[in-house]
Length: 144
Ligand code: HEC
Image 1 (spheres, protein in one colour):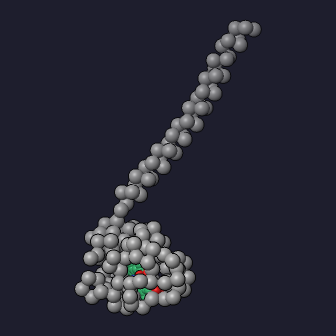
Image 2: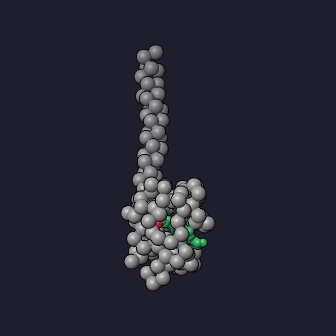
């Protein structure tokens, strides 16, 4: 009787332990994934060169650049840190009343879905791909 108990106990303990190890391993992997995810999103800072091309294709006609300045819409030069609706050009009341001070996250959200971020904005287009938005923002930040 005593002998079977002794041989069973370490076995049972071993099983529990393996179970715990698997759990620890899974949560370890989970943490590793989170860390990797963070590292990747930090590294996903956009490519300003690709952003320039996108800007020329999709934004320049309305927003201008250092040479043309704002054409139809507001100038985007120096937009980081600026209040929404302060860039000149055609602007909606919704934009100036939005209380946004532009930074990367707000720009990203606005570009992803302009009229969801600012109800009543008159900017007609958004940028669907997250990668494109990162690249565009990198370029916009570099515009002087
Ligand atoms: C058809 C013209 C048009 C195009 C194309 C366009 N925009 Fe706009 N954009 C506007 C107008 C007009 C506004 C002013 C919106 C408002 O006040 O509601 C605006 C506003 C903005 C603002 C807010 C500016 C501020 O000072 O508050 C940002 C940022 C912006 N656009 C980025 C972009 C980017 C990036 C692209 C290219 C992917 C782009 N826009 C393409 C017309 C355009």
